[in-house]
Length: 91
Image (cartoon, rainbow, N blue to C red; front, side):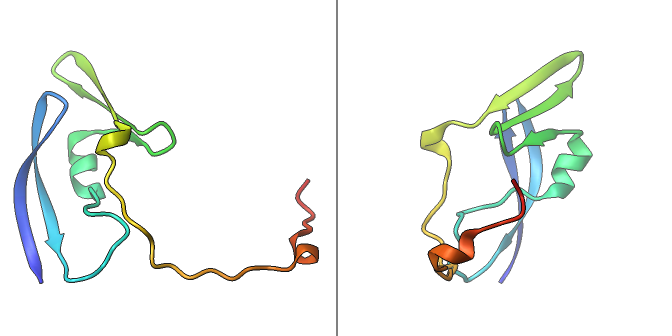
């Protein structure tokens, strides 16, 4: 549908981030893409739900909060497998 650039405060800093507006039913309300992450020198960790970046002479660490994580049910279909199909050579 279009794009919009909005100021987003992440930790103590404000970044101008471009969002794509789409008429779809995604699993997440918004995804913060890579262009701003690269331009700000941010190191993201999806495993630890944290962002780290340097602003001035300070290391900024932004932790995700469980009640602020925005997601919804996924519409991705899956296939159930029979018990014998679950054997693997990766042990």
